[in-house]
Length: 179
Image 1 (cartoon, rainbow, N blue to C red):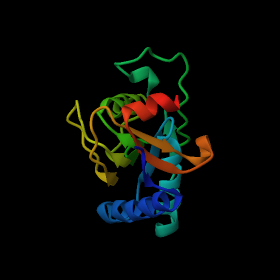
Image 2 (image 1 turned 90 degrees about the vertical axis):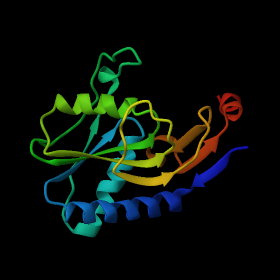
Image 3 (image 1 turned 180 degrees about the vertical axis):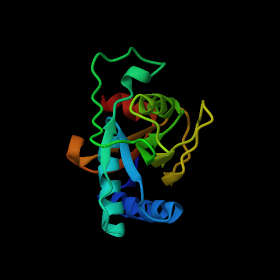
Image 4 (image 1 turned 45 degrees about the vertical axis):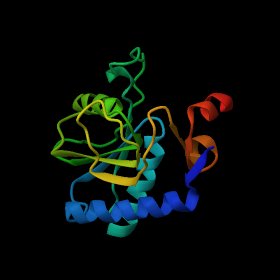
């Protein structure tokens, strides 16, 4: 049976809390920029950058990073859809994704970031951490930690892509039935 973990208000409150944690850990927003991993990490990053901007009163630049050409578990994409309209050199990059699972997407993102410059630091923020790492990568900021079975699925919907905001836990059989 699927379970709603976060609705639209829950996502908004979670990102607001995370923004305060990020600003506290960084002692403000100096040299802070956000990069959202395509696809659903990008709208999460935009919202997080907006929350950071509202709290700090300083605009936090936000870009998107396409990791498809850096993955080791899929065919490389022909086009790079990254859009980073600012320099990341000597910046504190806040890398954002919607779900942390094995760590492979984050490893690919680190390689993709290296193609765009050398930041001062890279910090990782995820909306949901579901465990089951294959690589020794841990997020610095987590919205929710969800205990899952390996064959469970975390479905994240963002209004910019899906028309609604929702985080839902689905079993493998529910996932197969919905496709």
